[in-house]
Image (cartoon, rainbow, N blue to C red):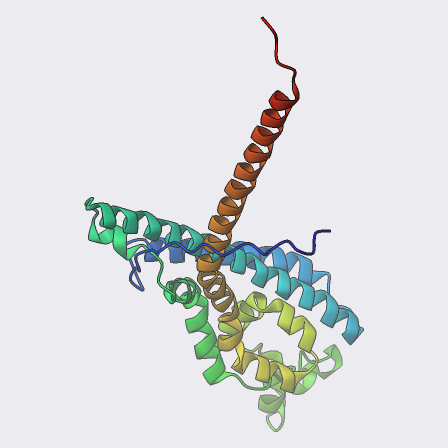
Length: 268
């Protein structure tokens, strides 16, 4: 190992900055929403088998699912950010050379908040539902259930019949109940960690569900911001490879020149 080897000098290329939104923001947010649906579906299948009685096992398994989900969005955002920086570099070169380009092209260049905006817009349908649920949630109580057959005769008594009739009428589903079912599926790894049996914990989880739903958008935005450093690494690697190639060619030329010097001159 060569300890005297100098670290590669970072190479940064200038680029034009874009706007926080552009003509592709809505389409990108729809793509984000589609990926979110796919990830939720896969995590639902995985987490359905991760409802262990042991809290430690539930925590480890579901935490792994959460980390994988966030890494997927982080890498998707990083790809988007890298492409945006590369577009900005091309437009900067065009600007320096006096070549024309459209304003819509410039808007699609890198902006540090564009990834977060794309992620939030892609999460908006679930986010609105989570906000409504958070403002209306309460501790869920188990309903009484039906009456046993031997008590059916008491329903015809005037004194207690009306009171017992309430036990035979199933509770109707309210809007909050439908929203609760959807949001619990979306944040199922967190639900598994808390456990359905923890009524107080489930209420707290539902009130925090808007914040939890923003985690994929934050991971996407953080990955998008990484686009600048990724482009820097790419340019640095290219520059370093060029220097290595030049050094190899110099060594090859030196060896060829030395061999020619050592060869005896041919006498006429």
